[in-house]
Amino acid sequence: MKMIKKYIQAKDIEYSLVNTPQITFEVTDACNLKCTYCGYGEFYSDYDTRENKILPVKKAMLLLNYLNNLWNSAQNTSLKKEVYISFYGGEPLMNMQFIRQVVDFVENELEQQVRKFSFSMTTNAILLHKYMDYLVKHDFNLLISLDGNRDNTAYRIDKNGNPAFDRIIRNVNLLKDIYPNYFLKKVNFNAVLHNKNSVEEIYTFFKSNYNKIPSVGELNNTGIRPEKQGEFNRAYRNSTESLYQSENYSEIEKNMALRS
Image 1 (cartoon, rainbow, N blue to C red):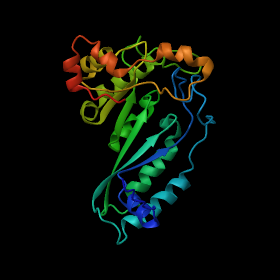
Image 2: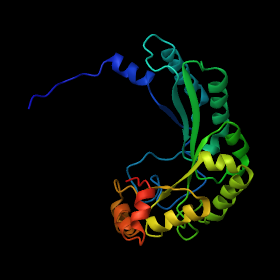
Image 3: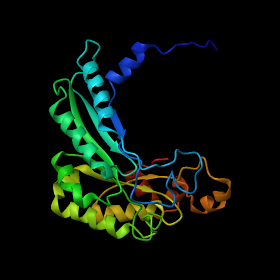
Image 4: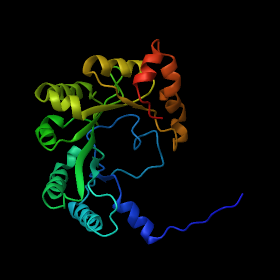
């Protein structure tokens, strides 16, 4: 078999940047929860230490200005393409100042004639009650992390070991009650599969309470500390196996997009 070698050139990188569909900022590595299975938690050894850092907004502005120049250049091949500006953490709402400044810059400073911008965020919803008005005003696509009902969500705890479920649900329901149309169109959920829930339980909870079909992800099974391997194995569940253990697996499989 003949192998074709192609070296990446500066123009290839520039083309990819010009046509990128999404820019994601890790606005902070701080979090107000300490979930047992967190990828930066006690199960894992192959991660960067969390140091409660925040991303300086000046760095974001440099990147956005650079991209804006590319978008307005002759190499631009995708006029009016939608670009998602996404905020991630840690818990991104713990650095709301950064988010406000970036949104203001995108809406008021960047050239809107060559790109259409949308905002998105993944959040644990603990601070949602403080900032929901702002998120709705700027039409954020919101992905809320929750593992199902109270028992299903037992691994989502704060740094004092207190369950987070009641606080999350209170804020989710508040958002739904105050902004029902926004909730219908812009809010989705993702859940982590483990030994305290199942695909069927996750599906049933979100379908019956919010008429939403959540995405489901398995625990990361790489980089496990040797001394934690047994504990991890007890917590781990395979999404396909869990799906086919469901009584109504064909209906769930049809309606639910599983993330492996």
